[in-house]
Length: 496
Image (cartoon, rainbow, N blue to C red; front, side, top):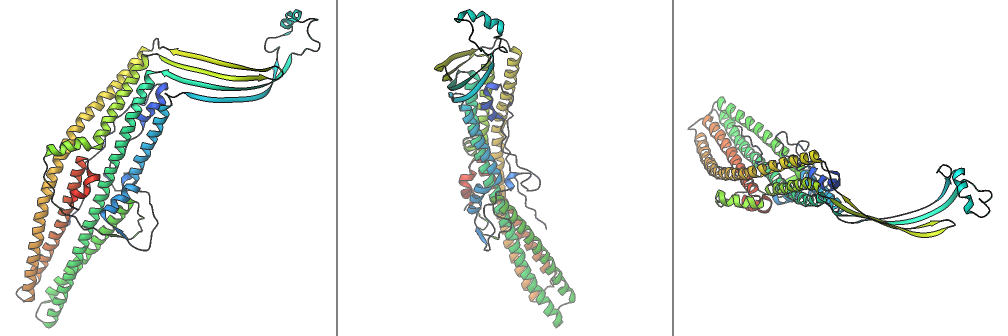
């Protein structure tokens, strides 16, 4: 009987679309809203190309010795090196940087400029031709100076201190609020990514443990089959058993060898996937130090778990902050009708060669009032309102989906716990049946055909037990993720 273990996740992070066409004054602020979120989990082959949480940044080179790896060590390494979490952390840093850019809209901008140069001027080209100059000749005693040239030059040195500040702008104020909400959303996005890493790594570790158990069971059955083959061969050589009994024992041994080879290959591939997720070089030898955990979970009602989920689910808090962002964007569009007040000024020293220096300054206030842009303004407001309504609907849907996930996870935990008990009982019964049948064959009461059947029954029972225990632990991880407390309490839920 072939038992296939699958890895899955009940969670998908939703991205709420946000407007990326923002008026120019608030662009540095509201570019934050166009940043991408954490990518969704892939359902195909487990590669980092499809899902970054299957990849990592390799932290250490390969060593000669074997790495002793516990579940806690694997989770810690995953939180340090997992590629999906790295991307979420970098996205949060980028948004924090954009928030600082948005802050500059409120702060004064002060710049200092200075220059010095030699300038040559053509008076005639600037409108001071001979006719115009002649009209000024009477102002000079004795007429225009001899050798007067229309080509003049001077040396100009100046330095200026410029000051600019927006005193009031509705879009900038609303944009700053959106920037704050975007920063909080990015934080919860990173925390959600940490939960994804814990679930991925813990699931991969449990999967590898289950594969290791399959290898151990196959090795144990192979040893038993080898003993039975030796016994059948000796009886056949002594003439007390038929050649068919020896052939059956040999076929069973070779079938078990095939099962062992397949189990070992599966285990090695599971280890490679685990190492890829936690930043360990795929060529590094690894020894899993933890066995398959088992512990009964305290029964909670759906209402209790749901209340915990509403308080701790990062994707729920992320979507709430995205809703705050969209409200701020909507307010920014509406505030485009408000006037904008700004102040600009500068003070400088200008020195002209041969003339002397003098201070200069400018102090200017600017009031900008939109008169008529009604079609553009209404279009922006209606578009942002549609985005806001969509986000509100998604938040309502997420509350219902959390309730659904909590109830489904509780049912899975309850059912898989019962399956573990049944599977454990089946292993005990199959072990006793194999022992009894072995005694009957050794006593010459039966041939080895029932023995082969009993061995196959035990192999299936052991595989089912390994699978049911893996599914039970996986369902508890899913429940902890549904409650939003996986990173903090995965040890409690697994019974470690």
